[in-house]
Image 1 (tube, one colour):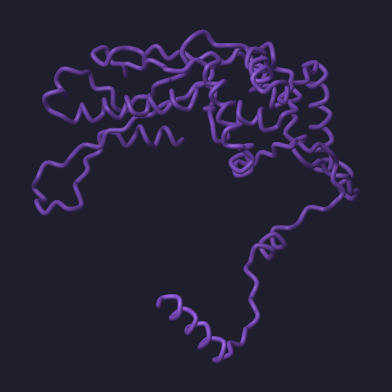
Image 2: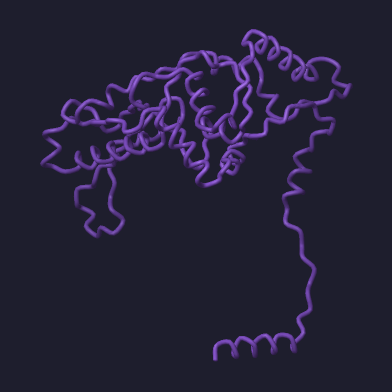
Length: 288
């Protein structure tokens, strides 16, 4: 939906705010979208490869799947190239020689063949000196277990509503059959349009980092900055500790949650004039 709004705004007339000449020909807004292949990863915390390194122990069953990746610097390069092309379209001399690619969407991924997830896991394990490890689980068993989690989670909604079941907490609740529609597929992105020359309707994109080179940079930056990526991961609602288990506490109601978020009133504090005068005198002495 967000991409539709951005692309739909392309070609809309825009009148400069500081323009006093209302009869002047309005400028045209030019927009476009970049579609990174299978998410973006890189230093300073991400939801993919950087999260693996921060988590250290990673149970997985997708090691045999082929997946394209997009390093953050390659994605940023594509944004700059597209911006350059849109600016060139606004210049009358260049507008005639280059095709109009505004309002379009371009896929982008790392250069080279798409690696398997197992290749990525092996690289991360090697680069971290086995601090980041992956435990391979059988996919069939995990799918059956996901059906059990779904059955147990939805059971109170259909039968035995008067009974109180221990609720599932942590990221275990995400292990349901719908997750396998996203994880048990090969994701290979075709970015040939972005690699075309500008004269042929492309962006002239040439990725500077392959996926394996980008993994090396991500791990090096992780140890250099001593960052575990937990701040950004928590902001996105992902717990890097993967605390599986069943919680016995009852869910808080909406009113209880709102009440806990309200700021509490502070008690009034009496300010003694002598203390204020002595503090001001100390500040004046420091200035002298």
